[in-house]
Length: 115
Length: 112
Image (cartoon, rainbow over all chains, first blue to last red; front, top):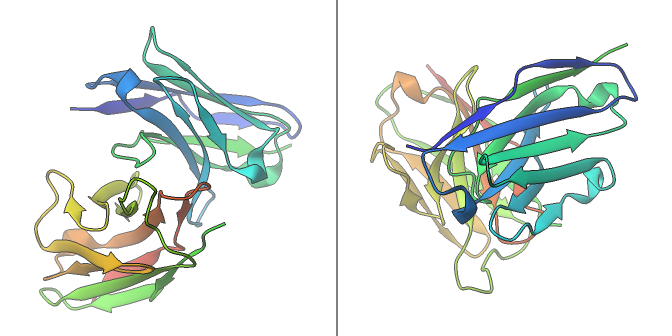
């Protein structure tokens, strides 16, 4: 069955950047996009972006425009999310999901931003 | 942007009794392809979310049939026919019709 495995937890200082990876298996990667969603501690789910693994089309939520970049590497069925200019309120669990409908989810990556 | 509003935000239900969660969209969710991309997710404590239902009423594989989704226009409902202990968690609706896609605030389900 489909599986999404994300990279491990990160601790970052304010103003720096983080890269989270998401390796897909068990399905044809180029048939589905990859979505990125985050969840701050004790809070709800928040959309960030999604990218088509078929043609590379990308949609970003305006709140993150200019700070987030999502990419895919179809040769390794891996998606990446880069977030720059980190602030303390970027502390959250970051999830990747299969397709814009989030059919399957990764295990989450905790990113902690602290000085 | 479409705003998704869930109610109630918290729900306490006796084991074996039904539960119902409402989700209202600030505008209609019919896509240009004719589909309504309204999904429901369950997030158990300490776990990643899991999709239960897509396109209003289609249960994902492995989802117990006590979960059902319904609705049209701007009003949607998730129903659990008989709540079990494993249903504890937070439930989110999500619209995937108009970008930016959006989740509701979440409804926390507890067992009495």
